Length: 513
Image (cartoon, rainbow, N blue to C red; front, side, top):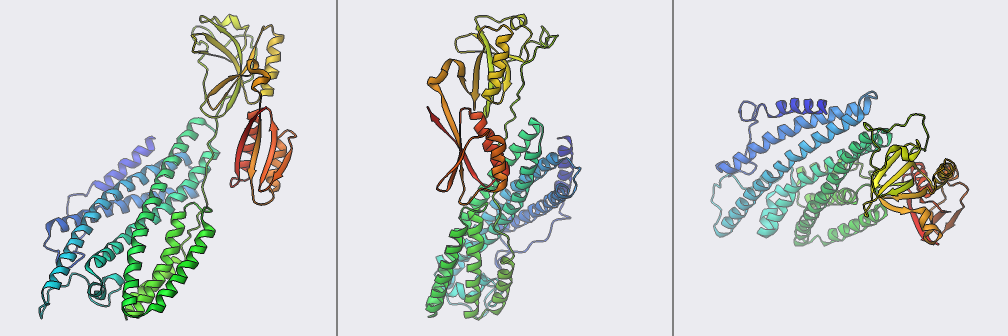
């Protein structure tokens, strides 16, 4: 954590030391001729440029940390992952600020364009017009060519311009999602390799935070892309229909239908349906834009779009699903009788720890109206206590992964003279007294594995090692392992199968006898 704070401090000096000096401020130009005299507009452009400098600096730092995480096998991977996440959050804050600024810039530009369009409709153009609101005919950006302004209704043209402005943001969200996905994979590996509970919990919290951020990015990408695609497609359809090229509309419909079939095949198989949809539809849209540019005689735009189409072909959008199973760090400890008790007035019997996830068995030694001295328990260790809802002091011994282990410990305690040791269990924080419930509350468990094809040899071996002779059967596209009298054993089987094949869908089914 100290190293993290030091790095952030150095980055802060790097990022913010030049703000307001003016010496390093990049020159800005109005994106639309005619707005140079708008003070608010030019100020927003300058602030956007400053934020971009900050973002670039943090981005370079993140890339350096990612290289270390990838190449330096002796590095503290958990600390590096935390630093990357902290800096990614800094980038997110910068981009959020940039987004607000860009929204205002776009609003000013849109209002200016609409006002000048209305003015152009009401008045004839002068012989020597001032600088146009959009760039001249034949520019590389398709939607900036004047033919769209001349042919489209004003509101549709404004929507087209807004869609084009959103393209950069959508591309940035896509880039950031992919970068985060790489970091998520690294965090997942670090989490699985962690041996200490505190370290693992910290990594898991970072993973969940970044995973949530990626879900937000995917939602933002989907919303922006739907707006872009709908408004661009409408504008291009309008232009081609107006020019009589209805055969090209049919070709575009066929391309979209083929894209939809490809998307349906991939849906649910990758990390993000939104990313798949974005890349597939963007490829179709860019190819459509090439066609439109060719029809309109816009050679520069057509060449530029062909380059974009070639770049899209190299984008890896089939990102693998990155799922992390939360690990249980339950502390199991068999019962012993050391010659010297570990408990005294300076080291009293601790409170029993209740785990919110997982299964652990303990032996209840007795319920008492008052706190009991250590000598009551004949040197047994480890011990713990809880005060129940009736105000009784409940004392427990040991901690066991399975009921069989707890039964063996119970038998040893009886030989030591304990009158009525009882087996109790906590499953996901829920308590049950197994000895008192008896057969009336008996339950059985089975592991269900959803798999369209046969199980791999690795999975079968994992089942054989942990299932203790329980049967393996198949029902349709589901394999069933069990029955088990002990849920903890079923959990061990399920975890072993997940480790052998993380892509399998596994659940533990419970039935009452």
